[in-house]
Image 1 (tube, one colour):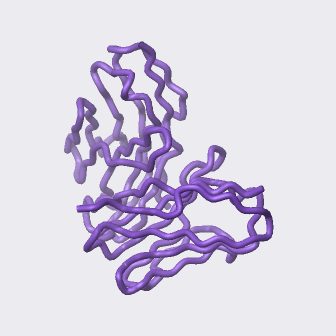
Image 2: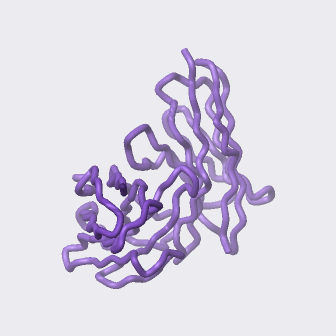
Image 3: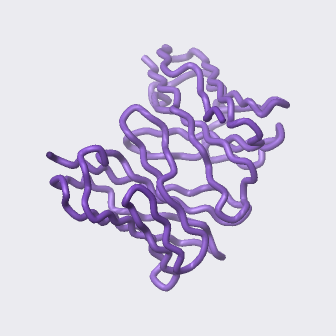
Length: 111
Length: 115
């Protein structure tokens, strides 16, 4: 079945550092790929998504590129802020299939 | 548009009791999915309802059940609560599940504590 693997962290960075959170997936067909973010005490919010190979999703300075050859969808941000501290979930959705989420990566950004 | 709402936000129950959680999806969305989130197991899929029918079910015991009403609002019920049922229960709605790139929109969750 479909699955998502991501680095579990926690990841601790200083403000303005570069962020990479790795995500790889296993899926049949051509899934859509997502990054969701969960701030303390809240539900998950969509951060960005990509629906086909080589698509780049971007939002709030975060980017991820759908790499079919390496089955990856790594999340990057050039300069993190304290307000980016949260848990980040990589997820995929196959056509007519349920969402599958990774275990989440906790990010802490120190001032 | 209002987002996904869940009630109650917090709940404390004792072992053996039963609980009902409610979810109102975004207006116009016909699909509601439920997830259990715990520190140890992460985000686990419970079930999905679409147009009042359960379409998919995760690997949870029969104590976990749900339903969806004609206005797309959904409830989930847990009977004979166990300590391990303590978790954040998240509801997500979408308009056209399974369509390419279709996004799920999450509510804030109901935090259940079983004592």
